[in-house]
Amino acid sequence: MTKKTQLEIVFDIVKMGQPIKTEQVNKHGLANYICSADRLLRKLAEAGRICSYKLTGDKTKTWVIEKKPVQLTLGVK
Image: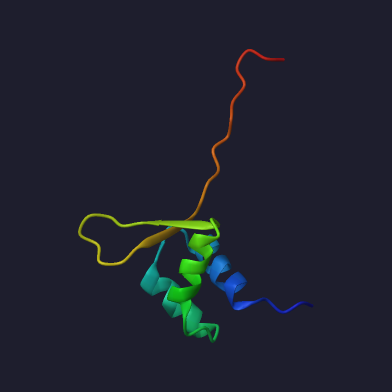
């Protein structure tokens, strides 16, 4: 059994709970002995694996796995 890195654990937290707020990721991260989930969220965003948005009235970001657009080919067999 391979041991997951902290980056992989934070990615899994976002993947399982998306859309998920930063404070929720921090809470679940602390349960997995990760004290710097904010830094890891930024690293994942810089790598293009996740993205964030901020709703009006929110103080923290909401994180989701970045969806890649699917190209449709209409009328082609």
